[in-house]
Length: 228
Length: 84
Image (cartoon, rainbow over all chains, first blue to last red; front, top):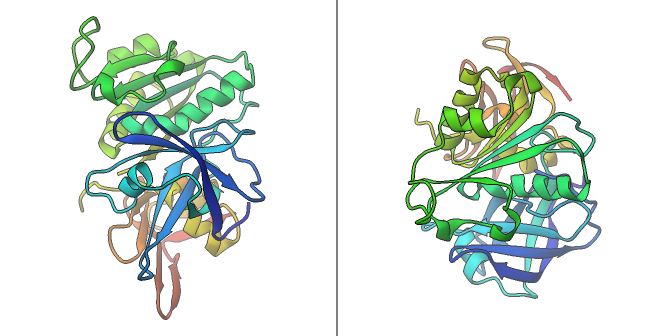
């Protein structure tokens, strides 16, 4: 894995929701990535002030590198990336990073993905990699999201189970948090020994990891990524 | 201490620059309680000028890291063992 910073050119972009945007980056000598890894992005202002943040890679290995960035209201970096960075502009990146919160097509056990909000991004890379690998081992996604307007990658989520926490579609179940009964119903039995990947805000990940342990899942098979 | 930590996975970039490669899947043994876990699972507190990694079990400080005008500081006295 190369270390240090390298230039990345925004080669394409698409809006996912009103506040989330997918950035396709062109990076010279890109070594390839694993599903679940992230990139550090660094911006330098005209006065030399620098800010860096980590963003998960959304795309499957083998294709172009895509990050999906959710604009944080009082953020220093994300609003710029979502609203201002233009195709052709350059930022600096470091990565791919992280060798733990990753899924490899050689894994044979069932996989449960549990996403909270924009925590879906690295899990989407795993889901895409899984589809691309035509793996026979099952992978399921539970996705907790505030409102229907916040749903990322809607066209690819036909098989996912969505939980709306603030406002639900009229035809769907009323808004509520994801609970132990949901994990038992839509996840895998403990005896199947699934690996569980959880990503989202810290409180969501703590809550969900606790529920999985209470259901009997071994902490060693629960991998988490909390983004604060 | 507020519970605003993230996973040390988020520190993969700076740690890779320090160690010359990814260490988030490396094992660290907490000098406080003896728990062995991958570095990615340590709790990261980086709201201050540097970064602090704490044991997920006993919350003891395992690793501290800061970049200052005078150099890069790495304090790993809270780790009994690192297996890279």
